[in-house]
Image (cartoon, rainbow, N blue to C red):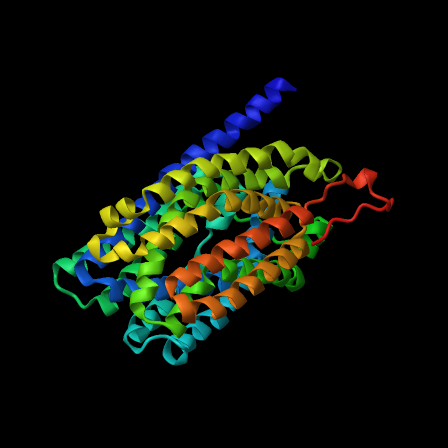
Length: 427
């Protein structure tokens, strides 16, 4: 038993280390891109980039819906069924891309965003299109963390390299930034497809030979339910950037996102752990799925996030000025508020990953939809009064709501101890 636990821990550590190489490179390149844009072109251009990147996140989410997570989960559970899972999920992702990209383009052209940002956001919406061809989720489910790490890193690395060349030749940032992003997405998709082709041989797609869970979970209902939950989670995380663009100006968007990026940079390190844990959590047998077994982990995660949060809060002004320059000093109070969400996210993200891995997508949908509603309502009230500072408070308040609901949604009883004799895992 002890040897098995040590082996599992070593596997998680090795997976996290491999992901850290790619994610670390991606995070560094992302931060370098923000620093380059902020110092070369100013707060307003950074605000336009923040809106474009936020829109790109929603388009990518629209392409994935729940297909990426469900596909990875099924491949982790049935590694010999890669081909049929891949075929079913990729067909859905390509169809969803035909909807998500045009919707993003329409929002960029006619939506409530500052006029100066429309060209960049419109081109950025088109730049995300190659993402529908990516097979990084297959590598994720198969625990090919080295290849997954490289695929993720290429998006930011290629994008930064292309942007540096564009800046060197004096290109207009309004089109140079989206084109650079498109190169990153296309390069990453090509690499993931190449690696998947090398790793897995194409096999026959025989529906009769598939386990019932694969047939059920690859249907549109399962994909869209989880997609709705992830969309609510995304709205919870960054709808404030879009609302700032609609209700204030690009300067407030730039200041807020310079602060928020510091929070996401720290969370990115933590997400390496949850990403490598996801396939392993999915392998837990139904009779062992209980929140009671997670209590010590949840407490440990909260404490692990508290110390760095307090340190960043204390040195918030020095950190933001040191990274972005003196023009961003007004973002220091936003950093001090947002960073308090770090320990809360450590717990809520772990709960969310666990629920999705255990097939309890509806519970995640309830939790994230409730928190997103609170976040949107708080933003509509606070942003017109306090700008980016109000958005920071709205984020912290909604995190508190999400924490309470996520903990309540965990299955605190094992299936065997529940009143019903029938074990049913939600999809």
